[in-house]
Image 1 (cartoon, rainbow, N blue to C red):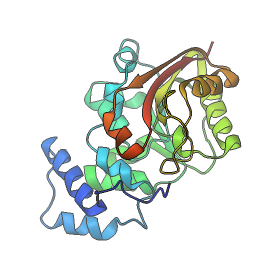
Image 2 (image 1 turned 120 degrees about the horizontal axis):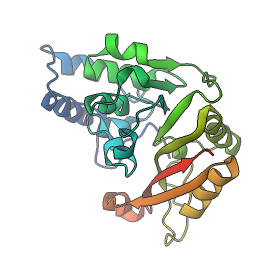
Image 3 (image 1 turned 180 degrees about the horizontal axis):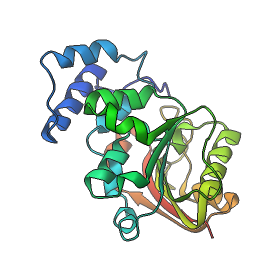
Length: 243
């Protein structure tokens, strides 16, 4: 899949406008002419994963089965592959202690888009770490979140490294949770029209177990739009524990 391509029938300028309307409904006020500024600045050359624009202002984390549990005993929280930072903002809106949240990504291409759409660079920049190399310490976090990251990592060594980093930076009894596109068990094969990594549920569970995670739970989220036009994707929500 060309990661810089929008889904069929969608355009980046149109989805940027939709994202801005969603954020206006959250109370963000844009200066006059700001839409034109945004569509000139953000194109398929500068937005690495255009499809994420379709979800800005509607953070998926809030629909995760584990989401209510993280508020029962808030700990140090890492958003590993934070993208535009939507999950971080949702956590803060819902009352999670902002000082306990860190976002990390390998580059700032998506987070800059988030700054410009949410108009909150000054507040968010101090919560995000950008580095090509994973900067987090061993046993630093109580919770690690992975929102739609695993399916974009095609290389086997890279995905093993990603999961290994998540496990290593968790404290004992820490939780790794998130979501990833996958392949339904009934799907006949992997479509070429898709992200580089589409695992079936058993494969995903095996990857977690092979990294050392225990108490693995994987739930298929109902997303019928993912199966149109023969694209046999599904969305898995998962949680796992480091003992």
